[in-house]
Image 1 (spheres, rainbow over the protein chains, first blue to last red):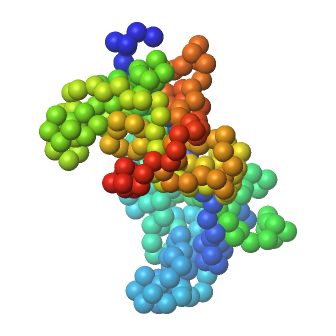
Image 2: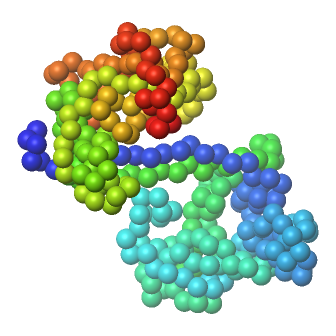
Length: 152
Length: 167
């Protein structure tokens, strides 16, 4: 190699982290593996999804876990024209904050849609879970949300 | 409805992170890497304070001036500090236990980390004189992988005064 040639090298920095989920996040992920959603009841009576481990107002333990979804409403969204390798979908999709039925907070996930014109704030969506055998207790157990009654 | 109860509750979550990137070393580090390709340690001296950095980043961090004078360093150096690695970790490529040492090359004012071998782990000590063992000439590349490891070179230990500034 000539000394005048610019050196460059491919590097990969990688850590195989695992984290313990605790009783609240663990319950949420367990529910995902079962193909359903649970949220935590806060001290103000609001239902937080995904559940936080502690009450955001009082910092006490959160209250009862309640079932929510699987349908919901898009609060806000952004269209992704060029998905990246680690994105949940490899075709153009939307990131959206979705308030599930029975919840009071928005949850971030992907919405599969034919194009941005198919989406709107306030649109109803529902979760499309992966087949049971593929679910591992992770946000990726939801393949994506799809527009209710829509053709996606 | 699927209930998944036979698997028990979820208690752990795999959250691997990965960053793929391309590194371009720039002028000063390229000189260092080209030196490795020739089996040499090449550093640079600061024209203001006179300190020799290896590998050089192209500037003196103390004086903030470019380092323009190239300095060929020796193949031997002194162990300033060290760590015996006994703990296995993901991606480990060297059999434990092994010694990771900070090595101050002769003529340099900056130590760098190197693998130390050909010595039992309980005999390593600060001030030990060591030398670089290179790969075969045909296998030299512009990378620190060209240095297989360092080993004791048989010289008497360096006096503490000679390396105390570099701990």
